[in-house]
Amino acid sequence: MDGSLRIRPARPADVELIFSLIVELAEYERARERVLGTPALLAAALFGDDPVAESLIAELEGEPAGFALWFRTFSTWLCLPGLWLEDLYVAPEHRRAGVGRALLAHVARVAADNGYGRVEWSALDWNTPALEFYAGLGAQRLKEWEVHRLEGEALARLAAGAGG
Image 1 (tube, rainbow, N blue to C red):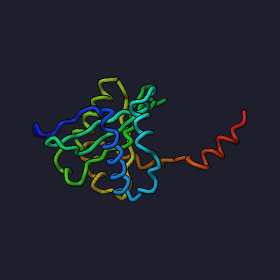
Image 2 (cartoon, one colour):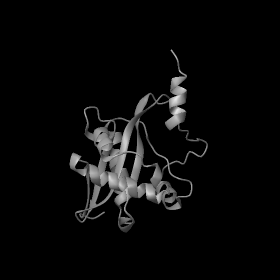
Image 3 (spheres, rainbow, N blue to C red):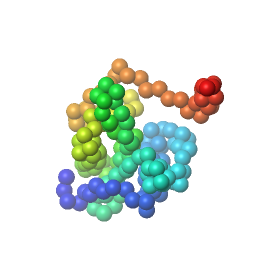
Image 4 (cartoon, one colour):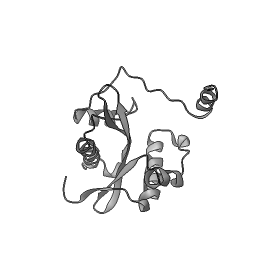
């Protein structure tokens, strides 16, 4: 990595940029229609009264090149907090310049500096470049774990049936 690559914490003024990169990532992942959030919701999540996520911006030669966004988790097996890397994205024109590695190294440093036990994320099974990149960093692929999600009507239906 040369001196032209800079990783910095996101600032409120970066919300529109981060949101546009989220949309780019969703397009790459063939799921643009699933982006239902807004810049205002993102701003509240990152910089509101009760922030629930953090983000970094990568700049290459002074231009935005990518971002990382994560939130804190907890492992009952380790009895330690961890980080869930929700998004790691490098714009296509900046790939292979060390940007992704630098972003992920910074996230790992945040985890290590805070005594967290792990950093976790998911990747689409067809995204061979990402899977190879992560393997090259020494990341363990957890093939035996299946991600599950409740959202929308299914989430509302289950919550309504919780009673109490």
